Length: 93
View 1 (cartoon, rainbow, N blue to C red):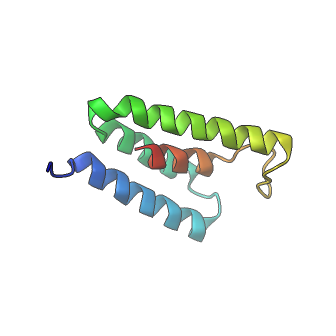
View 2 (view 1 turned 90 degrees about the vertical axis):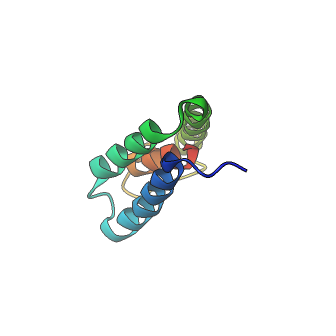
């Protein structure tokens, strides 16, 4: 069995920190969250990066569609908030 790559642990750390920052700050650190997600994507092993991007983009697309159609509503946001995009990138990783 292969040991998890360092990128796995960085992505897990980023995801946990993203949830915590979002919960505590309510949209104040969107740039930090997005930068952390991009870093997690960068450290995702190359063989898994395409799948991570596909997962993130399809999830962002579905949330965007649901938000646009009115099924989902994020308070104080007309469209999909940046923190949600960052979280989907983290989930994808």
